Length: 137
Image 1 (cartoon, rainbow, N blue to C red):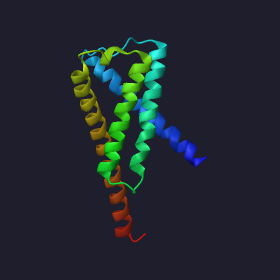
Image 2 (cartoon, rainbow, N blue to C red):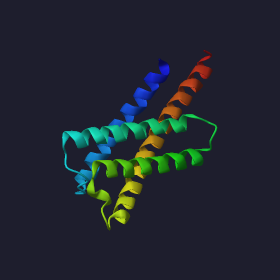
Image 3 (tube, rainbow, N blue to C red):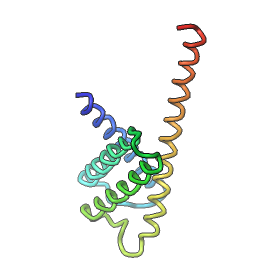
Image 4 (cartoon, one colour):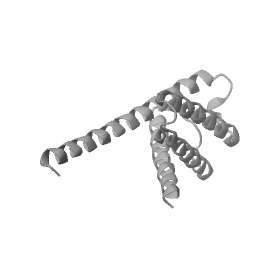
């Protein structure tokens, strides 16, 4: 049951990040696809799957660079696959460079946010542990 809860949390986190990044990209004037119920569901599914891929970072069998590389490639493949299935136009002829730059920028922003959040959580936990040790608990 705990494993299912963990998967749901990762998927929901992915959906929140995906929806936020989609809105931020739209604010820049980049039109990715028409906002329809079907496209929104596809975005949620895509984002949820990317969130599930983030479980890669939980393990310690692979180095961080290996985890990041696998996550990056798998995310790229998922985005391209959903683009093909949904007939979104952001990968039409002549736009691969533009797509690649946007993909890299979005991936970097999300990764940076994840890194900062993880770092702040770790720093907070370390401060709590140090306070307990200092107080003799």
